[in-house]
Image (cartoon, rainbow, N blue to C red; front, side):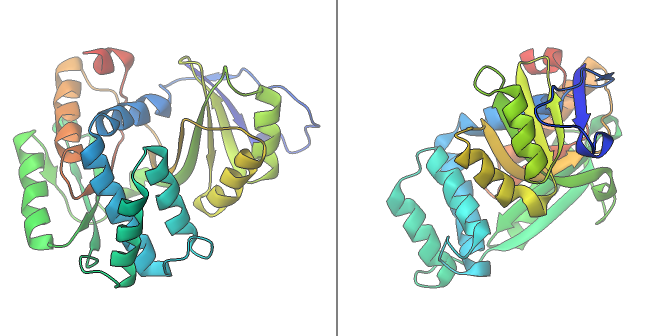
Length: 270
């Protein structure tokens, strides 16, 4: 169970105010994100490779100056957060701007279904779609899923900026005040002792900078696809879906994986 607060629901609330403890059914999105982050962060070399690709594409799209390219700035921040060496970051930027070879990457999104009809979206950056496509189809197939047509599950997800804080490290009222004033739309408190703030992607940079200015450091900050609703699966099917997600995350071309599976503590502990 989670407590949910929406700016739109309380337009006239004065500051400071407390987080309403209205409860709603469902499991926090934190569990889904925690599962994915734990899997990827355990493989630092693979993570650096993925982050290098994100830097290359950002620099290619908007230039090599992070001051003028917010997407590049975020990619660099993500790389620094996992101690990626400065030389690696600079090489990736130069590949993106064409100063070095290796910057020819393409963004491709694969949509499909896992076991039990669970929706799965997979964002990739690849230098060879003729390699990546068959690899994605094979991973889905081996886990009992299948690739679908473009748009088959994307309508079930919404792009959101998300920030996750340890509730022991932030003041609740200050967190909500900063979120309210800088584009946050939801603040959730979770049973795992976390505060989760979401916003529209266009407010992500403003909200990130506001948290930085307030010396509030999130455990997670990213723009991702969140399911509008989640679905439950019996343990056997849930484990199959997790194997599919892990197989996708292990692929070097995969940048982000989203699912509408309700990843419970029991599934994560197994």
